[in-house]
Amino acid sequence: MHQPTTSIQESAAGAADIARRAQDLRDKAQQLALDELCIMNQAVGLNLLAKQLADATMRPAPALAPTGLPLSFILSN
Image (cartoon, rainbow, N blue to C red; front, side, top):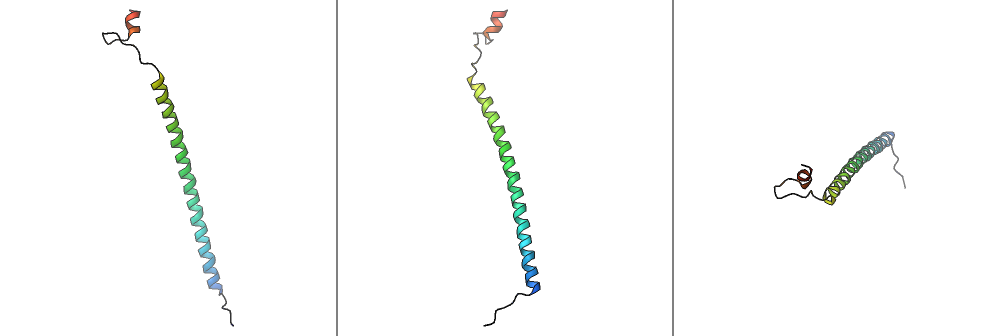
């Protein structure tokens, strides 16, 4: 039986295809790394926002006098 041989042109075309696919994978990896960085940045921002919200909800509201002014204002005057 005769085995088909690969021509130089076919080998070059195959190598070029592999190079294109490799570059595509590098581009996708770079985009994923950028996406990961953006997600991490958003997570940091959300954590800071959650901390601010927790701090704000744990802080007691100032007591108001019947006039609607804070008691500390009335007591200091």
